[in-house]
Length: 86
Image (cartoon, rainbow, N blue to C red; front, side, top):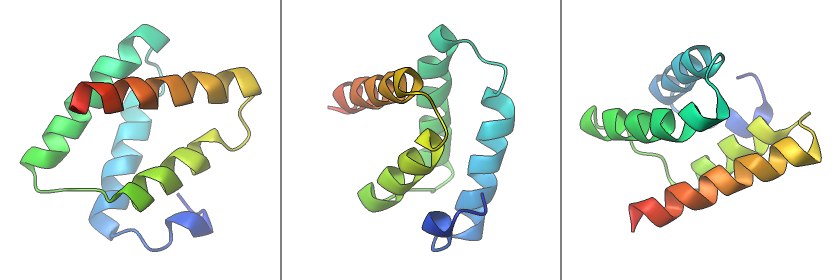
């Protein structure tokens, strides 16, 4: 949350991300996609929207310190979410 790449995010968005991080910590890989989809829906209902640049910055920060396998898994989840949005 203290990464400089996230410095430009609105405080409300950062709070939402922290809440998601706390809730998602113990989720299994198979539970993550439905969890993230529900979170995205809830955010939209609450009027919280992230730009493409904000989303990319968040993903890059999340991938920091992860193994190449974990980073690839995250990229796969992001790709699936983009496909589901269409």
